[in-house]
Image: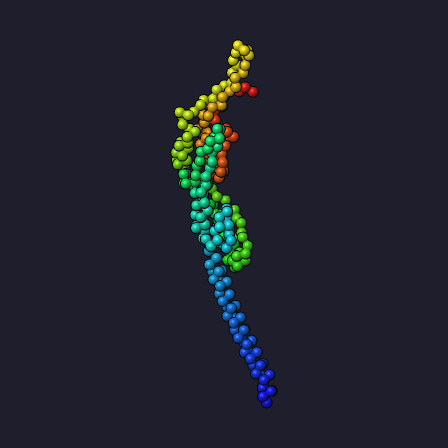
Length: 219
């Protein structure tokens, strides 16, 4: 009888262990389901994990917060202005109160995201581009440009035309023009404004054609 009872006891222990494992599995499954549904509830109104918009991580942010976060990055913007003599002037985003306006593009990105996919998003980075309009304070921009050292009238050199001169030793010679360094202020303002709107990081004034040029050149 003792020997016959041993297998039965083992079976009872095995069944008890199986029931215990099933219960724990149900508990874990229930916990996982609760966590998943909590994520679905959370991400119904905010961006999914690993959502990058215009280079900014907006994971878990609502649209209003995301707009501010993307706009705030413009405070770190800096435009380097290269002069004819290779000196430089600078304008930063904070100098001109830069910001951004979005015309429903963030809402469009959010609508394409399903909160039920939040777990998948944990392992997959989503790169997005949203159309934005750069804004800045025009008066502050004009004021900042007026502070440029290159606009100091005392340091301005006017352009001079090329000309023909007579020398005793060489006869008639061509004296090359002098470019000078006087800047057309209206052209400068337009070039800087355009560079800011397009978030350029460098503006070469020689290439932008803002300098007053001599009317007659040697070549």
